[in-house]
Amino acid sequence: MKIDFDGIQAFVVIAELGGFNKAADQLHITQTALTRRVQKLESYLGLRLIDRTTRHVELTAVGRKFLPQARAIVNEMTSAVAQLKDMSVNAKGSFTLSCIPSLTVSMVPQLIRQYANAYPDNHIRILDATSSEARKAVLNQRAEIGIALHGEKHPDLIEESLFEDPLVFICRDTHPLKDRKSVSWSDMRDAGLIVVSNFTATRVLMDYQLAQHGIYLNGSYEVQHHATAINLVAAGVGCAILPSSTLNEGERQHILKIPLNNPLVNRKVILLRHKNVSLSPAAQAFFRLIQEGF
Image 1 (cartoon, rainbow, N blue to C red):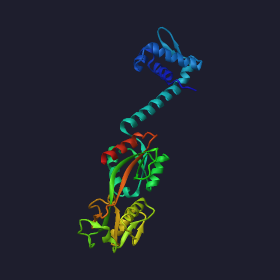
Image 2: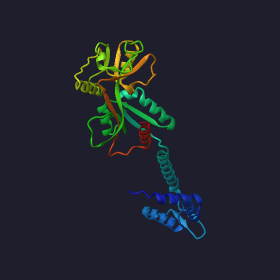
Image 3: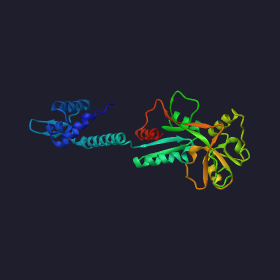
Image 4: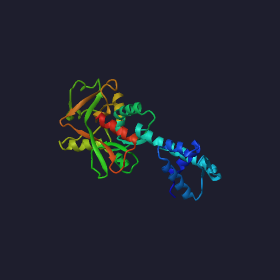
């Protein structure tokens, strides 16, 4: 059943203003067009809603009964369209972001703070996910935006490179290597190393790239999350190898971040969205914020 909204709106405005002239002006259409809208609605219903004379307009008994319902339809539709327009113009709404945990420690919170300042009424749901899980979340439309590591491309995903994130040496300011401008991988063979699990993309990447240079590291401690590694360093348990983005300079007292080289091991961070799905206004605003931030 096709709902004739134009006809219902015309009927309501005529009833409220008491005539065709004022109603036509209110709707910015001609009286002829207004008359056609009402006649089309009445023809569809098979009922007369308005009695017209040369001097005045009156609602029929059916029209009087229908008016409250018609007014509710018009008000609800007007409100819904206004909300959608507000969503479009002001990027209001909610969305889901899937993101690798290492970036939710420091970098993503900064972006979300900027976003919240610009769009305080919006809601973000964050899925902490491995790189492959972040891809699947976007692919399966459980998330509109994903932040993951460069890997095997999927034809239904759009990828944008954000930045290269080198692995660094993280230690306390009392560590013997604290004054080094850079540290080589061979310097750490006798250190009490804290490394992330070999189930993570970061560890797989590290082991693969180091193996190309004949370097193999076995940590004294293995953790699932980057934040755990930083906390262990802070407690004086050992030193860690982590992506640079995990820790901002000066973010934690007495903890230093020193570049690693020979070789330099980088991971590439990418931004994901679904190729065949339009972003909601709220997600689009966050997507632009990420692009501008990098």
